[in-house]
Amino acid sequence: MSIILQIEDFETGWFTTPLATKQETALQEKIDDVELEYLPQLLGVELYVLFMADLDPQGVPQTQRFLDIYNSFQIQVDDCGTNEIHQSLGMKKMLKAIVYFLYQRDQYTRATDNGPKRTRSENSEGIRKVEHDIFSRWNRAVRWWQAIQYRMETENPDDYPEYNGYNLELVNRF
View 1 (spheres, rainbow, N blue to C red):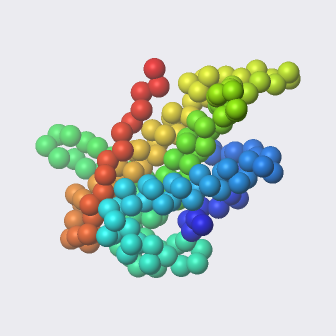
View 2 (view 1 turned 60 degrees about the vertical axis):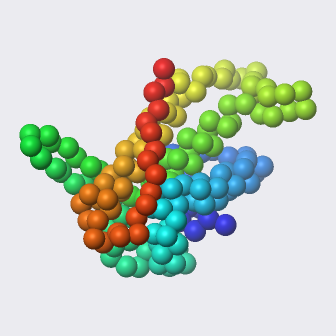
View 3 (view 1 turned 135 degrees about the vertical axis):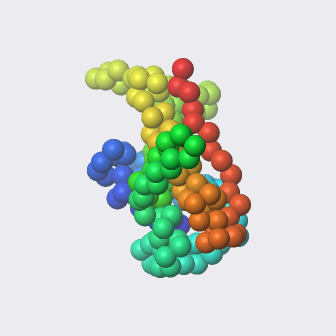
């Protein structure tokens, strides 16, 4: 069961996901899977275990080093003429973007006894994934992911000696 995200997190905002009753189960499974799969990749297994142990029942960290990567932040770096901004809107929003992308991507087709089928309705017209622009949500998640890792690996490595995360890649939608 997920700790950080809940289905209610997808009721409003940029990651709104309208759901029929049967779809709630599928979204909850995606939320659970993303937290279990992506958080260890973001932090590395050892830091992930420590992070999860630090969460309160509402899924919010209690110690400062974890709050520093959980909450939103901006870091501006001007190094040798290279001006970069590393920005995260928070770990929860990053996870929401990943869930949104993976859930919406999977909604485009349905598995049937006769193979995968695209859904069709008489009163609406389906669009291609690129027209829906789910890729921009993924790319935002990746940028927030990279900012969190920058904070742990480059800006404050002494605060995160257990860090051993993996990189995520931006996706080109064409």
